[in-house]
Every structure is written in structure tokens, then in C-alpha cells.
Length: 178
Image 1: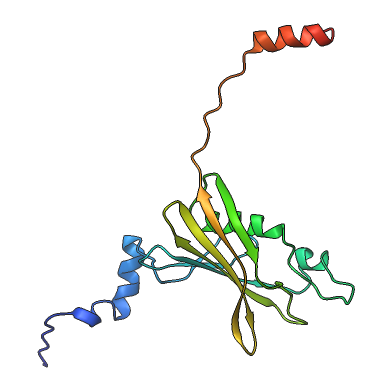
Image 2: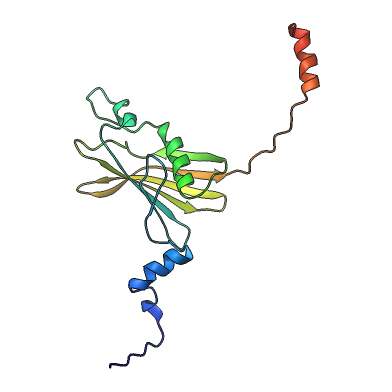
């Protein structure tokens, strides 16, 4: 029998067939794509810095493309759609609190690929107040093209007081009969 001794794991500590199983067992899925819940993204990958990359493949006849075409027939992702895209990206990253989107800049049209799915990424990077968001589309050839960027400020849900029903009834009775 051959005797093997490993000293100072270093760069080899995250290599091997058992590493994947141990990560899943311990719930450490950073750096490994996980399935996303939502129609815009299919996988979500986290890295140790807290960066979250979401990947999606959108068909050229998706309703949000199909309902937003130029006069020449080119299908575009609507600008207002970036708010829903941000919400889905945050949810896929496990964040369900209210947010504010600031400084949304659309740097290039997010156009549908012709007769092929459109590969899209959303990248969330932690900031002091929430996340920066970058949205990009894959061009073949050419690589990733940034189509939009924004700042996402996470908010604490506001406490909602119970309404004063008696005051509402008095106010309403002045205006109409109940």
C-alpha cells in the first residue's frame, strides 16, 4: 500500500470530489450556481465578498420583449422593467425588504437577440446602504455589454399604525350618510 501525507492544504483545501458535498451539507454555496425562483433569472451565484450574480436566458418572443418593439421591429427590454428586474434580483439573493432605486442609468439598449435566447446577467455588489446593480447582455462576439446600472438602497419597513376607526366614521359621516 502507498502511504500519502498532506501537509499545509493551502490552495488545495477547496479541491476534490468531496468538497462539493461538504459545501452543500454545510450550506456554503458561495461560488456555485444555485437555481433562482423567478421568471427573469435561472441561476444565482454568490462569492465570498457578498457579490451576487444572476443569470437568465430570455427567449426573443418573451412578452416583455414582444410588447416593446421599435418601428423597425427590434425588441427591447422596457426601461420601467428595470425596477421589476431589481426586485427579482434582490429576492433571488434572499432580500425581501423594501428598497429604493437611485441613479438608474441605462447605458445601452437591452435588445433581444434575433432568433436566439438573450443571455442576461444582473450583478449585485454590496455597498454601505444596500447594493450596486449592474445589468448586462451577452453579445456574440464581443462579450458582456453593460446595459444599465443603479444604486439600490435597502429600507426598513415602516411601522403602520392601526387606523382610528371612530375618527374615520366621524369624518365620513360629515360627507355622506352611512
